[in-house]
Image 1 (tube, rainbow, N blue to C red):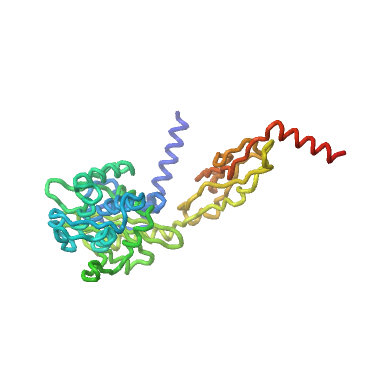
Image 2: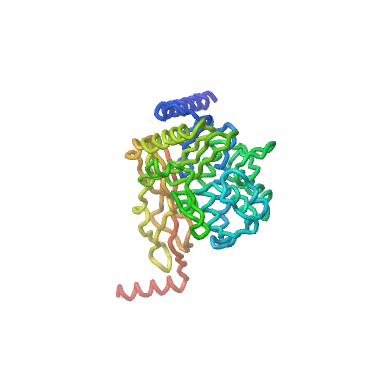
Length: 380
């Protein structure tokens, strides 16, 4: 028991030292809460990241996530026509002045949401996907729970303050939703737009995320502001294959929001790198005993990109655990070994399955007998 306590103490001390070092490098965060994540879901920094706050229009990252999931699953198409209801047209705040009965494609609606933060279009899309905004909000909350968001309750599709009911979430949860949204690359086609038009060029959209012009590598995702929430952002940027997400909540003004998000991203890009292990040497053929083929190819599961500290990249090594041969039969896709990525301290930081690339049937008795006869005749 005392050994476990001692190890726990060492681990906790290490975490605290790491957090303290990160705080020193990031600098002072002036917003109420912040979080920095890599797109693979690795948390790199947090500041009051579990405090429940209003996200304002950053709410729309969940609206966009459900829309992109519906598109990518084939449930809907970007060319589908979305009809504005009287309720959707009644939304205040930023909007495109949608008219009751007006129809725009889902593509245009998503553009208006991502670029212009259109509250009316967010509700119209919610109604199109779920039949009503209320039903859509239920889907938003269910999806949030699936993603591990423990501090989030959505009350609408756009983040507007509705009086007694308020959307509440955390910087941590917004980062998790942003990570999931980035698993749909098509969203960047919208969130990275600086200016565009809809309605056949009659209505101009200007992105509310001014960091697209101010920060190198910025690709999205969403800003937000209402007086009750302050200035918020989920800012995603990509450099050298590394994608980072900086979430800032309840900044007192736009400049502070930009400064805090920039500080977080600067820290991340200065200290972390994307690393993809080279597993090619693990994929050589393996002999098959008593198989109708003498060998079988080996394929690796996709190891994905890992987010690692830059000063640790040189210490990463790859080891393989695979047999010298396989007994037939062999089934395509069955796991036959493991590749491990090991850090400089000998800890396994990622495991990747090695699998058979094709089926290999077992030789029958007649196959074996025929082989023995051929061997005997060659020997004579």
